[in-house]
Image 1 (cartoon, rainbow, N blue to C red):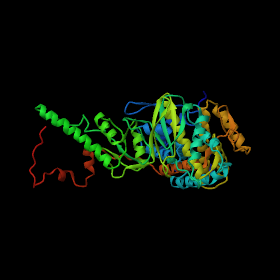
Image 2: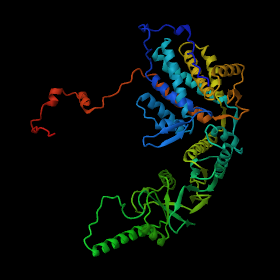
Image 3: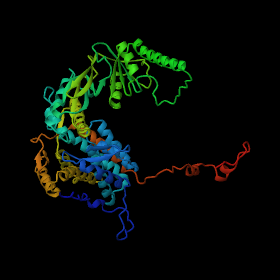
Image 4: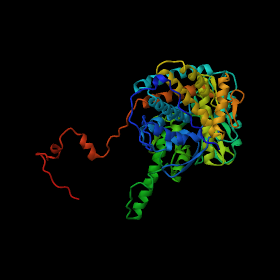
Length: 556
């Protein structure tokens, strides 16, 4: 596979070629970075670059807990990294803001930020004063954001099937049967869209069940959880009042630090009766609070379950803690650490179990707005495959939410970046002062993204970029990078949402404008002994014992 082509820095005009004279560097000595954030950004980009685009590779992550995660999702990779450099942490925060907002584009933020910082260092070496670098970059950012809407050539109609737009976004993930999956997501989003045209992401839930094939995935009304009823009560058909517990459904856990000292058979009999009475009182408290559904993240004691059956309480044992936390947010009820009824129980219309082949799910249904209306139940053989499929589904839901806010779409496959680079280069070559070189630097940084797409597709980067530049110079701004060479993004149905692209550019601009103004990174001393040196009191005065307290030697 061809290596990544090294892009030359933008040609600086002669008006910037002066600057202060620097001491000559000795032969063989490494060149010192003028921006301390550049090495950290390059290291972070080196990790993320192979995962960018539809042909990006996957990584095996070993977490601090020892578990292994197979993913190519940039946000998950960044979350698992232990970063010490403050610039790398700032880049990760910007990427996470992009992932939590529009839902996609974390790799875009890291790679573009690294390219912009690298070009900023080229400008400093070319003689641009540091005081002029930040306003020049800010002007280039404003121009880029102003140009972005003019490149939008297609919009999603209010009554149009969103499948074609969601498929392009979801196809960047390594998940099988993307056609079928995108149709399910499009149907779920379309069915939960409000009458006024708005869309709320929380109206569509996602549930993963191991077993079966991806083709066995389906849509269920309400919110479906990977859980199972434990007792005889398996359905509440109306007026469900739900309590959530993150504890054992029963008396105190056997691991609790308590010891019962029994000296006779009579003491044992009293202890058993007291335990049974405690169980009856706990379940009776739930029943008196009109709780008829209890979702438990923990063990379920048989005697307590029998009492719950007696009072008609449906007991559900959840398999994942995140499901109980999500249900707590949806129901607006707290997750109780003890077996006590909450002050405000969750309410829904009905709760019932649903068999799905070899799997079993519990469904919560509502009839009010603002609650999950549909759940996309995903099936798969492995946990890693389900994780990748669920991530693609979440990105599809996020993309539809963006399209409901702004239906405009941009050509993908790097075509938008190349079009912006061409326009900025033409304007930068005509501008006077530091703004012109900043435009050229922005254009060069934007070209790094289609270069990465070509590299990850296994193409000869230099040839692809030459063809791509020629097509855009000829006025065809829809040409991007495909699996076998350059493609027409519109004909190939490769799109990016305008909301996500604009949000990503703003996130990049914020972090880059902060880092280009930093000339030195200082790390505070952490040890208590060194921290005392910051005390303004003289050392001898600090060591003098107080006359009000007798000093005694400390024993080893």
